[in-house]
Image (cartoon, rainbow, N blue to C red; front, side):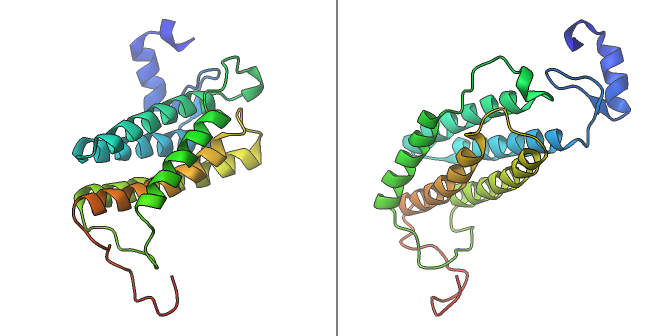
Length: 193
């Protein structure tokens, strides 16, 4: 499809606001699917920045695995007609279980604070919180896409939901390892979150 098309022709279509998916051509760049793919790409990029500054080898390895998962997820979602997708799903129950296991281990070692926190106590912690918020945005976009048509893989939404909670506790682990005894709370523990 697009691989055989001259680069200049692809650029001109792009200049006019059109682009391609794996199985469809000339879609408007504002199509909901591109919102999904863009948010997932942003999430992976933000996780990559956090991985680059993390001093914990466990964090770096986990984030790289997650970034690879997000790349696979983008591949799974980059089809206009999911029923025609032939590749096997990569985001599987096993990948969900891996996220859950990582969360359980980190949550046991680094308990959550009693209220909402304000990101910024450490660079890597703040970057992880930024990535978490981007993951949440990606999740919202994916839910819109899922309500319009079935997703090619039913494990994508649960994965994103678990990922945001994992990234939250990963930020807590990074801050604790940096010597921060307790994160800065958004407000006191007297009511509210």
